[in-house]
Every structure is written in C-alpha cells, then in structure tokens.
Length: 526
Ligand code: NOJ
Image 1 (cartoon, rainbow, N blue to C red):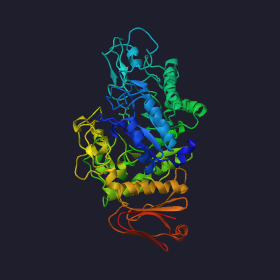
Image 2: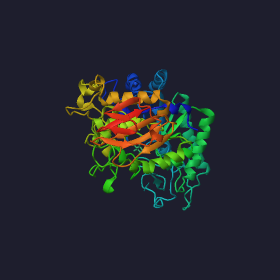
Image 3: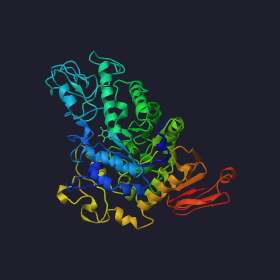
Image 4: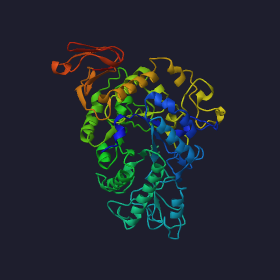
C-alpha cells in the first residue's frame, strides 16, 4: 500500500544547479531552494523531488555519486539540507531525495578500494570479471584502468561503475548470485544510505534506474524485485511514512516490487510523447531527435489522437490502480521541455489534463511558466538534455533573478530571448500559464474526486469528438483542436452532470444532452 500522504500530493522537481543561487556564485544551492519554498507552496505543490545534490565530480550532473552521505559543497552543507527538510515540513512540503543505487562515480572510495589488488572489504562491491583480458559477456565494461587484473561493468556512462547486486542467471564463472553474500552487502550498504537521510528528515526517494540492479534478470525482474521488496520491508518497519518513486517505466512491475509510484515517460508509441511531442514518430526518439513530425494530442490541429495514449495507459492503470500510482509528468531533466513544441494555450490544456488524472503528478521547475528548451552546448554529461536544465526565470532583473553572479559565471546561460517567460511577468495576469497551473492544482486539492485514488472512466475518446473522462462525480472535457467540437451523450451519462463548471479554459457548454467544446478548450464540470 502506498504512503497515505500521496493521496493528495503534487510534486515539484528541482534541478538544484539551476533553481536559485543564494550566494552569488552562479550556481543554484540549497538555501536558494529554502528561499523559494513559499513560491512552491503558492503553486499548490506539496512535495519536492530534488535531483542528486551529493558530493560528485559531476560527469553526469551528480548521478555519479562520490559520497552518498555528503551534500556537494557547491550546494551547501548537510546542515543546510537538514534545515531545508525542517523548513519544508513547516510549510507542509515533503522532500524526496534522488537515490542512485545502481552505480557510483568512479571516484567513490568504494570503487577506489575495489580497484586494488589486495583483497579488502570492497573487492566485490562492484562487478568484476576475473582477468584483465576477460570481456564481460555482453555488458559494457572497462579494462586496463586498475591495478587489479580484471574488467568492471558499467551501469550507464563510463564514469559510473555498476554496483554488485549479483546475477539472476549465471552464465560465467565470475558472475555471482544475487543472493551471494557480496550482493547482500551492497544491498545493506544502500539501506544504510537510505536510513541516513530518512533519519535526518527526508521523506523518501526518487530511485534512479530502479530496474537495473540485478544483472541477467528475468523478464519479470524477479531478482531486482526481491531486493526492492526487502528494502520496502525495512521502510515499513523503520520509516512507514517514507515514499519511493521509481524510474522503472513499467508500473506493473515497479509497484509490485514495492514502489509507491512509477513514472510514465519513455514508452515508444504510447507514452508522454503522444501527448506533448511526438518524438517517436517515423523512428525518432525522445533522446534528442526533434526532427520528426508532431502528431501529439495537445498540439493544435496536428491530427493527434488520444487513443494512442489511452491504448497503453489504460491497461497499466487498470492493472495497478490498487497497488500504487502512475506518475504523469510535465517533463523532467532528461527530456525536452514541453514548451519546445507547445504554445501557452496548448500547455494549459496539457497541464489541465495531467493534473486531473489519477496517480501522483510531477511538475518540472519552470514548466509552470512555459520555459523553453534552449539549443546550448552540453554541460556535465547533459548532452541534448542540457537545454532543459537552464536557470529558473524568476523576474526581469539581472540573470532573470536566478543569480547575482556575472553573466559569464553562470552554471548555464539564462534564456536571453526577448519574450523569455518569467514568474514575475505572469503573476499579475489571471490568465497566464502560471496562474492556470495554480488554479487547476488548487481545484485538485479541493476535489477529492480529482486526486490520486478517485476512479477514472473514459466517456468518449473518438477522434473528431471532444475527449471526455469522468473522475467520480466530475466530468472533464478536452478539445485541443482549433474548431468547436460537439457531441450528444446518452442520458445515462448526462444525468450525472449538473452543469456547474468548476474550472475552464475557453468555452465549454453542456445543455440537455449536448456538449459543445469550443476551440482549444477544457472544463471540469460537476
Ligand atoms: C537517469 C537519470 O535521470 C539521468 O539523468 C542519469 O543520467 C541516468 N539515470 C544515470 O544515472
């Protein structure tokens, strides 16, 4: 069962490098986040996910951890982070840190010890073959860099050696079972890291590459799931209120393995991209290919069809609705911002949809004002992702209010285009994207039927008609097209509609059995 507090939670993802610089050194920090907690609360977000803020050489933006228990000096100190937990809690905001259990940095002391010839406590903390010329059976590996005569397996980039959680199917003599003592020791070491932060006040974790732990796992990820079950048992006993969201991309497996939530993002042919930007069209990929034709649903007159999303989402939703939550997101630090392809009206409709769906939604910092994806050079292993990681745009002052540093010293450039959106410029306009996001999230908190657990029922999803779904006693109507759409619904559906509009974008009317949804409109009707 998922943590109780998730029932009415909206997350805000913060990329700490780029959120708010409080000390003028050009990079965001923990005290900057503390300064902006009231702003986050004003959005209606009541929980944070902070990308890795630990000591790191930053060859993959902090996903290469050098010390799991130390805040990177560029963000502040451990005390600053404990202070953030306290301040956030005082304001009713929970805080998830990013847990990177699958790999460390090659500069982590565990790995340095593991590279040594002499046997020591860390010899088997990573996955090594048994000879310097012994390749690693289909896994990406590195040889020739250690005094130890063996090669080690990577989990992602070259800087990220894979921690040893063992193998499910053993095909080589150097592979150890996932129940081997060495694999159990790694598991305990990660539990120790989790206990450390939870006992200092953090509320749980976003778990990086959660499905990657046990190698040669079976299709159901039985080995990796056994580890998460074990970790869940520990949490239930020691930190029953803690929550975990996985980067797994398979809620049926992730929620059964003990996660409270799983992200819904990178599914070719049916996920996020069919809503916001059709990256997979014609063999493209969400990983940087921006050239493909866009038939995404919220793009005006792009011929999108919501059934491409529903066809995949609904079976996952049905399968997991009693186990935990699917987390829809506006985007994240690995994907291209929706503001790359959708304009302000299209974004309003897309977000109104995301924040009225079941599960636990996530808003990526800056998406609430429609920040753009910038075409800029790579930084710290970001590659194409760097364009979605630029500094938050607060106001019209120097560096758009992100930092008082010299422009040349900024971690990443701010958007210097003339019409770069800012929080300040949108505050006073009741129709701005920012205030629309606030209104729809406020409605979600007010209406139990829009929250995580209330049932979802599709009323109409046919192409050429408004998309209509029911959440308990409420009906949501969406029309992303540039022309009015009309539908006559049978009495057994309309009898549930009293016709009171709770929220709307554009014109939507319900009269007798006829629903008219004006061009680019959305409404929540009781
Ligand atoms: C997924 C993270 O979101 C991404 O930013 C990172 O590069 C990889 N995992 C490796 O940790």
